[in-house]
Length: 158
Image (tube, rainbow, N blue to C red; front, side, top):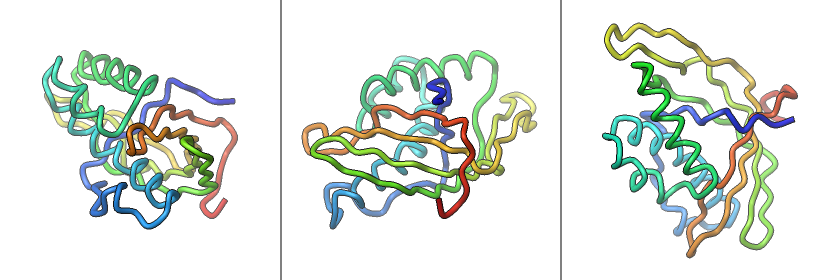
């Protein structure tokens, strides 16, 4: 079972040094594109309302784009923002034409939500968070289209 309500936790340190367009293989490009959404999410979270879509659009396409934008608005309305960097453990990358999927067994123990006013960490992530991402090749660029939380557990090296 998948939970479409799960949003990726942004990462201040999850930057890529290789453009997905310069990747040696399609699998490598998909992985770079997937990792990029976390840093983009963090930037968008700290961007004023109405200016977030251009921050996310290079990395995310519908329906995830709208879901992330709604999630950021809801999070910021509570006076919270995310902290930390998920440790990604991608596996099962499959590319078929202009569509790709990958699984991730994320370690989110060093991520969560923080109160904006007090800077107190109020929510922590967990280990072995199983996510499944669907990516689409849009005008030569891989973009994440869906991201679902799988309730079945995973383990690193799955």
